[in-house]
Amino acid sequence: MDNQTGFILKVLVISAALSVLIKYGGPNLAVGATPINALMLVFLPTLILALALWWRSQKQPQQN
View 1 (cartoon, rainbow, N blue to C red):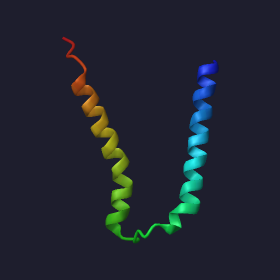
View 2: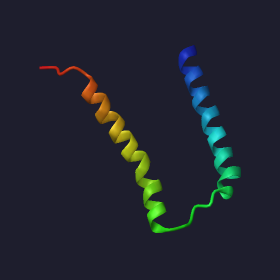
View 3: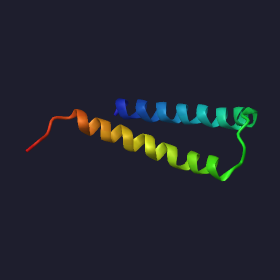
View 4: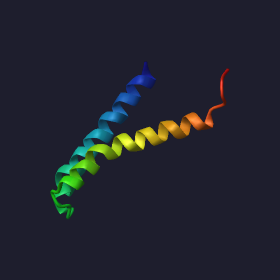
């Protein structure tokens, strides 16, 4: 139980830190509001996760 509680606490702390970083540091970034930037922002996490899962599947031995 302690392991799950620690994990949840870590996720909450990282999430809060990321939220503060976005809220106060985001306006300092010079990123234009263009459709290309919006598409990259939406699809980049999905693409990164897909590549990570594909790479992980390539490293595992084949099971027959």
